[in-house]
Length: 476
Image (cartoon, rainbow, N blue to C red; front, side):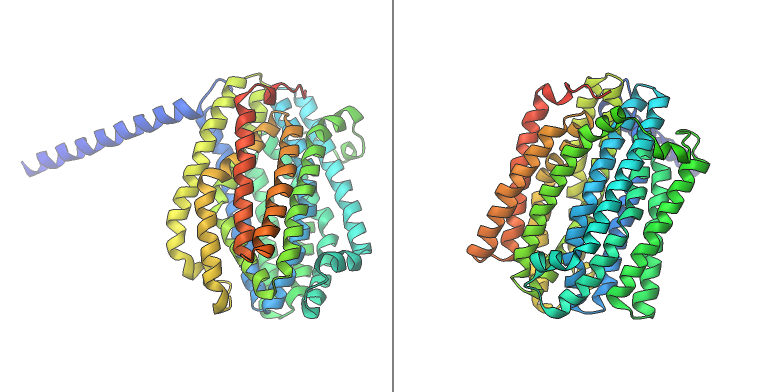
């Protein structure tokens, strides 16, 4: 009799599990399956990108924590230069994104020859651009530092000079990795992209441990580590592209010959996005300039809060990359209905991810911030900034970042870029200066202005998405 009831209870549990699976599958079919793609393909695209983003953010967090052992001035120097690095590297990434969009649309139209041609063109154009920019920064590093961060203390500037020269030397390496990974994401090979990214970033952390923690080389050690890691990553990316990949069929000579017509297609997406990144990150750079005037503690507060905010945004950031491939392939196959449906679903998923991550991580603020060993005076400021930013991000981050990625993947690059540039300068920069400096709210004022900017540009992107112009561009 006892065995009978146990058997019955087990069957009831099995029925509940089966019913739950059916309901979950029905939900996934309803919101994440269409004619051009199903939820299994989306999950296969998303998971490697999510892991990649988690590792990148986690390793950057670890690197910031390691350099913290060299003192507040070292953290401030790295943070200042990294604001310039982000500004410049995002220009390369923007052009690589143009390549991703073109590759994805050709993949959706099942034109394998043009997929290969677009991939080669993307790698070449991004690499050449990075080489030129890196050489210019190395040649003019002193004027750049004096104009942007001249008000910083002497010890901060000395460390910043070393890190800037070393970083600019590494641009060519990271550009190759970004271009190859962008092309691979365009054809849906996110696992290969993940592997290349992990090789580069894990090597960077291991070398930082050696040079910073064991050899106590500080900023110089971080500079050496970043160059070794990025060029090793570039070598692996090229080896995979020419020797291991069975889809693109690229040869070395393909990188030295590509048609102007293909370059135009890539630049149609890449140039407006690159201009957007220049203005957008230029605004962030200018914001960093007046944060410098608030003192070393303010710089450290901004750096630590920014690093923690990136942790909270990991799944949403992965969605903003995944949606480029999804929408690009939908538009390439001519399925606008699928593109619209998937965009709505991924926006809701982005907000849900930010809510869940916020609820999970905010209770662990103390151990998280303890990684950076900040001065006790700024811990309260970091908490307040992070809490307000987390609450604002739940409704605003997806429409401000995931949605423009989707519009850009459909070819609507000019509108997204102009909107981002205008809102960035009118709200984040000007309002940030008014709230942070003029009205005396400090770092909190700067971050509140950023949240206002998310709201304004996100609203404009939603208005654009409701119409038909965003998918009217004929890219291929």
